[in-house]
Length: 406
Image (spheres, helix red, strand yellow):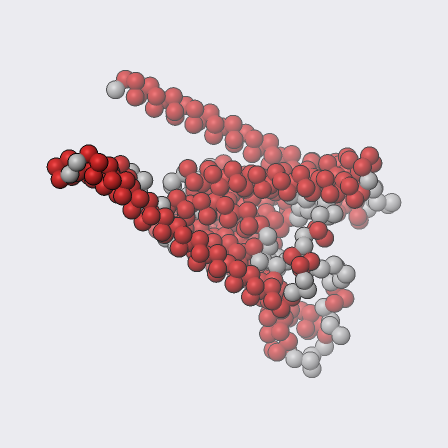
């Protein structure tokens, strides 16, 4: 049999990862088998597979650092070294990738690739990168509204040209034709302008949509077992170390396990979707090159701090990967703080398993330990939000005063 099966913790559970990761993981295991063969003792195969998956995570870390360097060299060359070090030499990331071999860095690589594509105006590639990332873990799906709206905005052309074109038609018609002919010319000009402006958007929708569907079909084909293959219901009853887990523990005595799990997971999913859409709208209005990265960082932090059902320490890789692109400030500090708090999770949870007998009920643990773990980063996030709001109000006030004086 399989020498690794004995070390598997979730033997009777369907994989929580997407098909892109399963293809990559299967290919890695196959390659190790080809190299090690069957003549060696089982322990050699186990060690070889462990090393291979650590190296795989390390490869994605190196690729992610390269993408960060490419983006910053183009847009903020003075921050290249700081951004790469924050990502590639961060102890949290090193522990969870090269140390523990988690695949979260593979997901973040594709999000960073999407940011690189958007900076270069490659909008279809950006969406496809997010689709592949979502086929590793679902989180990049939440960034699709931001990427899509940025693409839609940029492919719309220059809005300021509409009035200019219309006026040119009017001025010419006053000389060449009657007022009626001028009106026809003006409307024809507007129609031509809007058609030419919409054509790139329509092309983007058709090509990107078809390519995304093709990617999804390609990756899911080897694993397809009917519509239930797409189901996430198996994850809706898993709660730990989060605010939803605390809510689940509080409601459990009155609603029962099934109803509590359903309601808490539904509310969390709706809040996450609404926040992702709101951040997409913010990215639409923000015309800086950081609009996608900033929106993605906010989405990830909201999800991790507020709506994540099942929190694990290695999720701290997500915000750190995006903070590497953002300017020094609250984002980098919050990501670093969250990383160290995440690594402190075992200090709170593990002693219960090691020392306390009998183990306290899950409801007792989740009601206390999850909120305690998240309290510090939530407080800092609120402080950062208030500080940002105050700074914006002061800036707007100064601009208003300057306009009045002029």
